[in-house]
Image 1: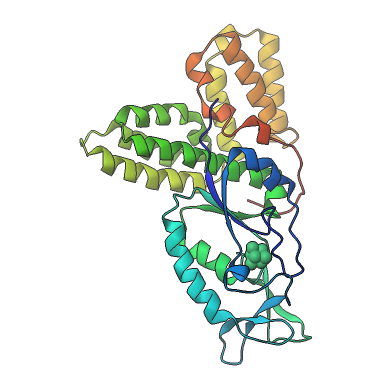
Image 2 (image 1 turned 60 degrees about the vertical axis):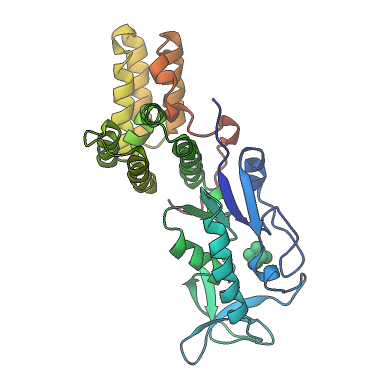
Length: 324
Ligand code: SF4
């Protein structure tokens, strides 16, 4: 299968530059693995506002006037205004880049988008919260609600990574359809993604189906915009095991007449194990795909549910951290 390369914005210190306060770069096996398959666009907000590396660490504080500020941890020098004007300009630039997703540095007072520590002041003091958002990361969440935004820590969790990769590769593939602006490409995209979308959200799938049927004879540009809106909503949901089982039963229906009683029993046993969360869905997909090959079912072989992103990016490593 040939995949479009998603455009992903990434915090520069994640494998793209020694720009942290201590002059280091973060090692991320996930980011490294993604490199040959995506286009990374990186920046370091702190260095972009003129801070050196190495430098004194900065932190987020809630000052006495209840304002959130970004300050040097030890001296208290305030860099909030510089950061805010940088963010304003950077947002304009990022909006022109047709991004498909973002990977931000976890817990940073600049790039973090959740679980960022907030202090009362600079100097030696305890954090008053660890549920805050970084200045830059928070702005990205607010201004790009349509994008999947993750941090490198959460991406070490298998389920979160799978959800992220499926989202950004599907978005990148849709972008190609949007660029060609041909109804036949949209019809093909919808057909190839049918079962993947069914696992995500049946209601949105029905809406997308109606848009593709286009009984109202809308102009293609209008259809593509609406389709993108609903595809984004669909991909923001998460495939629930019950829906996945339903899709698997649909797929099994293509072969059940041709399978022996033992083959069916074996498969249903696997399905039971999946329902009890003892094996991953990929174990069932491998068997279904092998039957699609054996019975030469071209329609199913085109389905993205069997390979929503490059198989080279599939690893079973799981930190156990985070939830979707
Ligand atoms: S977290 Fe963001 S601001 Fe901090 S070093 Fe990394 S890229 Fe730069």
